[in-house]
Image (cartoon, rainbow, N blue to C red; front, side):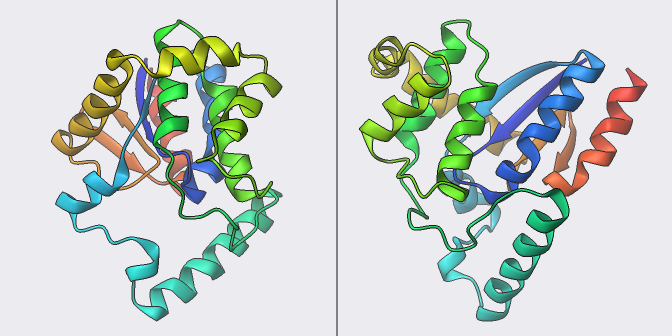
Length: 197
């Protein structure tokens, strides 16, 4: 069972779903292809709009939903984090570098998401990225060096192009071939799909 996991490191919904999805993948022995994706490019072709450009009523409802879900899941969440939106490209490339080095990226992804939504840390700051890698057991120097390689940028671009080609329009999206599940609130259906084998 293979799941393609399209994600963004500053997405509150990826944050709320990440640990639960990781647990499901482990429970059912699924292989996960982690695909950090440059969402502004996806939004540009799929009708998505950055948060600050959305209608006031949509922005207000988003706060209600984030609060409800964070309380429901027992996850700490700052609804208006200091460093959001944030340029996440360098952090995403460090995650991709970990993947290309054969390391499991789940802990690093979770740390980046918590940094934005629970810890008020700047994901665009190289020192923060280095600290997050080190704190979670990764070789920060090796990952940061690897992240500068052209192959990493190429993979980031390829993830984004693949997301567009496969009609992904938001994150997290969990994909089983052509079958897409968008949003952490679809994890019940993801589990049903994993149960089918």
